[in-house]
Image 1 (cartoon, one colour):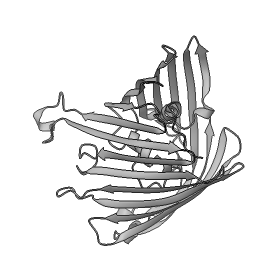
Image 2: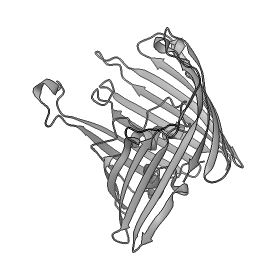
Image 3: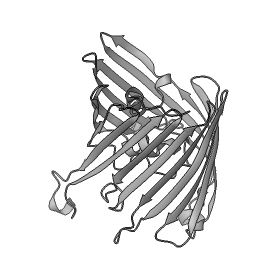
Image 4: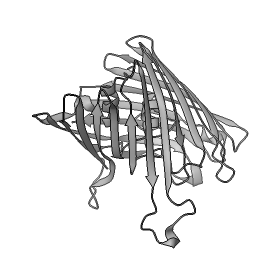
Length: 335
């Protein structure tokens, strides 16, 4: 379960964690084309009752998607790659659009000697390379940064090659107002949100540190978000993780916090178990909240798995509404 950090695996991590199930439909003269898809659905219930919303049971989609990945070997060291991924609602009929979202669409160049350059609509490097060791749940239970943090669209990124266990990355997203009429323009104007970090891996230990300019245009509060994680593979079956993330409090937006996370993964046979605990302190309230998540995933085959997940976000510790235990039960088919 321990995340390796060679350049090739770092790129495959950006390209997605489901490469093992992808079907190679073309491989000739240095050019490859892979297709991967997932249909996932199940039941969920519980969770927050903010504004008296109904949190009863529902049969729903859990991240169904279709993905195409292409690559071409330009030289012995230089490879071009591209990816597009669509999301769709897999649990019900959709006559309006078919696909709900173009999740990713990007191109890039990968060199073991010089590193990897990526351009377009891709997930946050800060999330995947720094905080992502906690992103193990199908639906809820991840309290750190998400994949869309100041990312997904109009972005450029560079990751160094592996340098004796060290790797660094830098990325930037451009929020442009080009073509907008004065009434639609903001006081900020054009904004560039950067993020960067460094990782180090040696034996069973992996360390990561990073930052994000959490701009208001990108859904943040205008302050810098900083995070760090450590992951240790105790043996082939068990790994432990520790994380910390903080963001300053804005005078106009608020939103400051400090979050500590501690968790572990245990894998035996076809079973994988996850357990995580978080303590979240918000600058806007005097009380903190303690959240936890637990899950069991079972692989019926390389392509079919089932899962049960529980999450107590404990939102009612810092809010006036009720927050019931969230649960999800479902299945996923990978093709």
